[in-house]
Amino acid sequence: MKADGRPRTAREKYGEELKLRRMAAGLTQEALAREVVCSPTLISHYEAGRRLPSPDDARRIDQALGTDGFFERWLQDLEPVFAHYFGLVAELEQEVTEIRHYGGLLIPGLLQTKAYARAVFEAYSPTYRTEELDELVVSRTKRAMLLEEPSAPVTWFLLDEAALRRQVGGPQVMAEQLRKIADMADSGRVRMHVLPLASGAHALLEGMVYLLTFADAAPLAYIEGLHNGRLLDDPALVAACRTSYTLALSDAASRQKSVALVRSIAEEHEHAHRRAQHP
Image 1 (tube, rainbow, N blue to C red):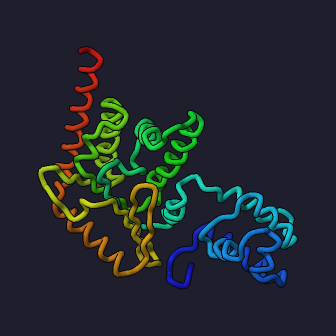
Image 2: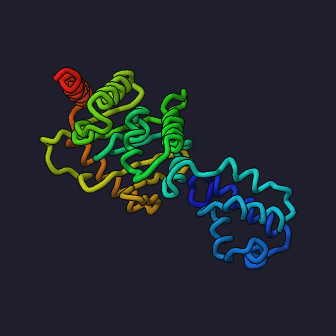
Image 3: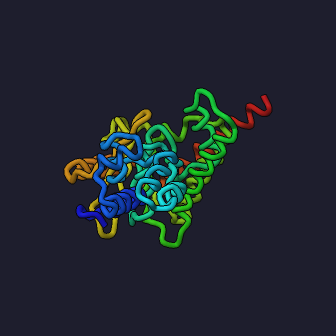
């Protein structure tokens, strides 16, 4: 546990161990940087858990500290499978007791089917290889297993109707995606509400927000844009995000009406698929 009450992430533990081993070896950050052939600032980032060393840097760290491959081997378990700005959030998900997510433009990753996720990754990539997409889809699928565990967090999803109607991957993919969401809501695994298009402007219209609550640490908020994301720990900003979520939730349809709307839109996608198959 960190001094601010937030759980330590795996990369922060890595950085703390690096700092302890460096100090035990009697080296300053500047001295270690000379051995690794990098800047002292980069060593500082490694020790704070803000960045991970490359495999070559980890190998040179082991040589400088006489740690017999310790940091290079540990790095293999920490190699990022998510975008650099989301990796910390993915680690913190394992500690949460409650999640609240607003999906305005996309179905949130924790809910995505493999076909939907693949279509999203294809759209994001100007060029791609099949095996790279396979790895990304597998990583997203593994992350979603969080909701299958017996100790799964209480999870709320607030979805904009626009995300339900956008044909990501085509009508058949969307029909399967929306049925999955409705089934999860009906089973009680998640709490899901929809913000109908008819509700007009709402408090989360300008962006995505992801709220994380912990049993013994302060809550956090994560916001994301194009090719960037930001984890918020300032209490005032986190509180403001939670207030915006609550305001938007007050404009949403009830749970029962939301599930019915999701199933209705799924049928619309299914009909569109049938028409395309038999014009």
